[in-house]
Length: 169
Image 1 (cartoon, rainbow, N blue to C red):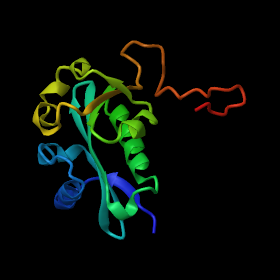
Image 2: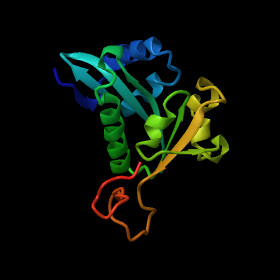
Image 3: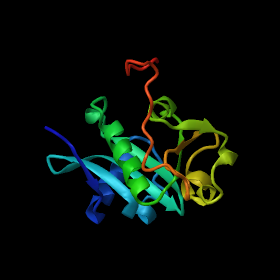
């Protein structure tokens, strides 16, 4: 059975909250920002989610969760990719997140670690930053969109490391 990623509907909130609780992830602020969530569904059931809190040109990626039986199938990556694309279309130029366990996952997708105090001031006012995530969580940032007035068009692609197009890892 394949999973499909789509914008969350209000009826999905309880399912997303249950997934977050099951994964021991914070639920504070989810209901208030649920309009920015995407969900993955399979067989009519919510099996994953990720949220975007928007603060002007800055965004907070939060609450990435996948049901245990669906982990390891690329669903977290698909949700993250779709959220990054959605954020870019909505005018977000800088995307931040906090994570206690998934820094390598996000680093593989272009996010880089930063000091928590380097996050945009508006992001620091979010419930996730202010209270929900512990101070030891890694803070990460993704800058993938051109600044206003830049000559760049669209989201820059990641360049390969070798002339033949293969990656050096």
